[in-house]
Structure formats: structure tokens, C-alpha cells
Length: 334
Image 1: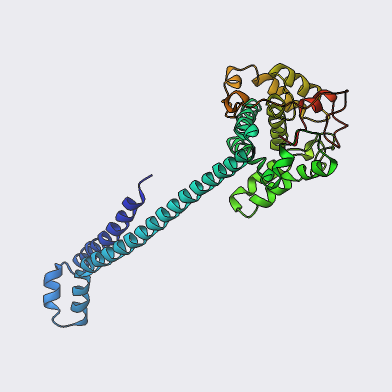
Image 2 (image 1 turned 60 degrees about the horizontal axis):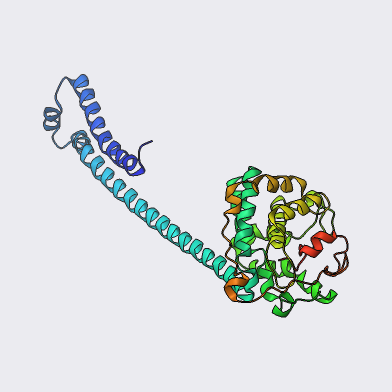
């Protein structure tokens, strides 16, 4: 297909050339009718109307060329305005995307600043989720939504008191209820920004359970968006394998085993199966851990005391297995 400016040029040339075709056709007509060339005919006609008409026909190519030039200039003017408008639109879109990316980084940094124990959590969860998404052969659009959703899934905790997030003792029911509001708080924070709307469901429903005992809406099974089910698994894996001041942590093998045991009632079995596959890949173990560990801070981890089975779990978590509760799978959504 020819470029647009080349097509516009052809239009103006066609208009100009058409005048010459008209003249050529008229000359042939006159010659055929009177067997006299056009110049002799015009001179012989004196000041008659026919002579004036013939002179007008002679000027047709010039008129046509002028018309073609005017049309071409007008087309070029509109074309330049169109390109300028598109260029401005592209610049505005680029600036908007840059602003959105800056907001995402700012949100993640703000959340990391609340507690050094959770630094890097959202980034690791993003990587786990994207590996699961690749295993499930999700579309590029789904992966992009999942990536941003994973980075921002805990942003609602900006509105949660630090003394609750870092509390070493068992949370009270009121404190746990406060923690459970963070998905909805995230939606409230992000919903005014239209560009974040595609990610809201992933963030809002990433603590739902397949059996309906999750929060905030108690969705069951496939009522939970697929991307939220993936985020739930990626979030849980990082939570139970990460160090926190209020719990012990599991090895990769122990964590995978525990998550597999809860496939069905808590986690989507298909997603858990994908996690079990990708966790054997070298890239899974090479995910950069940006969280600050105890050796770097000079602080000593203070794991929650593990008493009798069933103790040490958060309020409202009796439906979870003791292993998951003790490992901190429901440790304030971290």
C-alpha cells in the first residue's frame, strides 16, 4: 500500500491531468466535426460565443492545474494537522504511562517503607505469578494485568496501623478484621485513577478462597477471577517462605507441600499444579529477594511461639490447617 502523502500527491496530479484530457478530447471532436484545427476555428469565429467557449476550453488545463494545486495544498494542511495531533496524543500517552509507572513504583516503595520485613514481597509475588501465568499459557494482556495487580495487591495496607502489621503476638479479632479490609482499601486508593481499573478485581479478590471462606466477598470457586486465584497462590507461597518477626518460615519444599494439601478448599488446584511445575525451574530459585534479612539489619528474628496445635493462628482461621496457620499463611495477608 502506498504511503498517504504519495496518495495525496496522486490525487492532485489526477485533477491537473484531467484538464488536459478534456482539452485533447475536445480538439479531436472539433477536428472530426469541422475538419479544421482549433486555432483556425477560433479565429474564424470572431467574437462569437462559440469562440469564447473554445478559448475557455483551451484554458481548461490551466484551470485544472490550479485547482489541483489548491486541493493538494489543502490536503497537505489537513495532513500536517493530523500528524501534529497524533504526535501530541502519542506524547500525552507516553507521559501518562510514565506517570502511571511512577505511581506504581511510588506505591510499592511506600508499602516497603512501612516494614523492612515485607520489603520486596510484592516484587517476588509478581515474578511467581508471571511464571505461573506462563505455565497456564495466559495471554499477554492477562499477564500485564496480573503483573500490575501483584505489584499493588497489598497497597491497601498503607492504611493499616504499623503496630498491627508488626505485632509479634496473636492478633485480636478486631485487629484481624482491620487487616481483612486491606483489599477494599486498595480499591478505594486506586479506583480514582481510571488506568488502574483493569487491575482492581485482581487486587480486591486475591484473599478469596475456593470454598467461600475468604474475604472480602466470600466468593466461591470460579466466581473468583482466575488472575486473583493465581495471585492468591503466589502471595501465599511468598508469605510462608519469608521471614517475619511474628512467625517461622518454611522451606520451598515444605511450602509447596502445604499449598498442595490445601488445593481445592483454599487454592485453585490448576494453579497449584502450575506452581508445582514452575518451582522446579532454575529461574524460580533465582528470583531476587530484595527483602532485608536479619543479618543485614543486625536484628534477630522473633518467631511467634508455637504452642499447642491450633494455637498461634489468627482469629477466624480455625478452618485452616494447623501447618498453614503456624507457618503464617494467614499472617495478615503478608
